[in-house]
Amino acid sequence: MRQHAELRLKLKLGASKRLSHERHPASLQAAQREVSVREIELEMQNDELRATQAALKTTGELYNRLYDQAPVGYISMDARGIIIQSNLTASDLLGTPPEMLIGLPFTRFILPDDQDIFHFLRQRLLDRDASCSAVLRMKKGVGDVFSAMVEAKLSQEHFGPGVVLLVLNDITERTMAAAQLHASEERFRGAFENSSLGMIMADMQGRWVTVNRALCEMLGYTGPEVLAMGYLKLTHPDDVANSVEFGRRLCNGEISSYRIEKRYLHKDGHAIWAILSATVVCGTSGLNRQYVGMVEDISVRKLALETLELSHQKLRQFIAHQERVKEGERIRIAREMHDELGSVLTGVKAHLSVALIHDQRNGGTLQPRLEDACTLLDTATAALRRVITELRPSVLDQLGVWAALEWHAEEVCTRAGLACRTHISPETARLEIDPERSTALFRILQEALTNVVRHAGATRVDVRVSHAYSSIRMEVEDNGKGMHCESLATANSWGVAGMRERAQHFGGDIRFMAVEHGTLLVVQLPIRGRA
Image 1: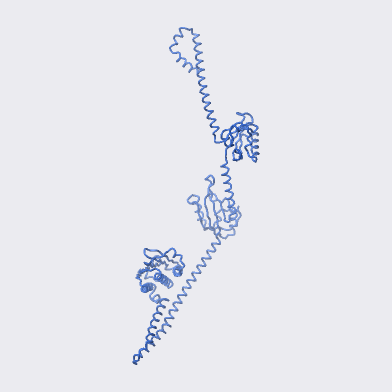
Image 2: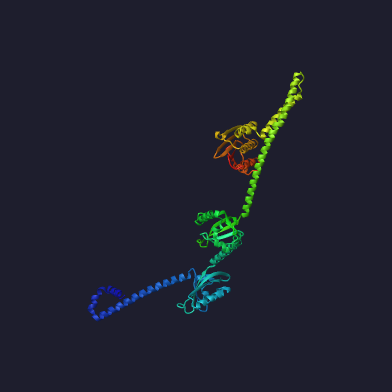
């Protein structure tokens, strides 16, 4: 600083320095110079002091603003528990102006049930605990209550012995959220433990962490036994690979949940069919992921479905047997009608013809009733032939199914006045199929053409037959008014049901499809297989 003072003195004296040397002795000049330097030093010190005071004032104002506007409340409390200082945040939290807080006991703002907690907090400070904290329920103004995290520290350096510095942080929202989370966890825990379904909590490595009582009862083990064994040992060997694959995809985030049917092993060794529904849940931090599974025992349902399927299978077998019996009866009745009734009608017609010829030769008058009787016999014979043909067309047995299909389509369309086109591929025409499949194809075509004549209002019918991959494909397409194919798939029509049942008996199926003008029936019938 002296160097700066001397430099400033030199600048101040300037040109007057030579005159001073001539008037005064050297000792006096040196003294004057020293006094001047000291004066300049004092001026510089005063300038620094004023700058420091201004900076200190600015810092103090900044500190006061930071202190008052801090996000937490600050309170200083003396050894008696009386508030001696507070910031604006603490004043807002307690609902009391800062000037009115001074001199009030801090315990005035604590709910009676939490007073003991605060006294224990102060006792810990007096026992030379550096700092401590507690959650207190505090009063704001007259009626409001909030939860506060109170951190306390004993400070004797700035405020004297026994003074406690308190930091208040409003954690009402956090407390409410924690309470709601706790209630939610309790509800989940209650639902988990009391669920009628088996429940599983597992980590993302597949280790079961906890299971409920229902799962233990389902598997016949205790809870510790189930957790010790793990899901691999409890899963049926045939279902392990599928379970591991779905678990891997879930853990890798490829899927968010899955639902599969699988078998678990009971303690006594028998398999339990179950539906496992699994999903991933995250903890409150969003990082702690866990696997939650629900296991529904469907063994009884599976047994019922198997029993029902067996019943359906037996019913289909019975229907097929009935169809065979019915076809046999048709053949027998047609043969008997042809052999017996046909012979009788032929004999009666012969006798009447002989009688008519005899009358003509003898010159007698022809009896009109004999002529009418002959006409009626011709009509009866034609009706008999038609009935025999409908019962069992002889062409089916004599020329085979392909000729029978062409003949029947042409016959029906001729009677109904429809244009008919039948195409059977040459490769298919060389196929030989067993009599039962032949009968099934013929009856399906018979029912399909009957439906076209009765309901379609068509003018043309196309019948196409081909085969590929050991399966016969027959298509019947008309140009009629069409139908709702979706509703037809579940219709209660006995004709449609009969066609479907005949096809399914051999492992085939039928489908109805809407085309641009009309309806297309597609029949798929395996050449060999189930019967």
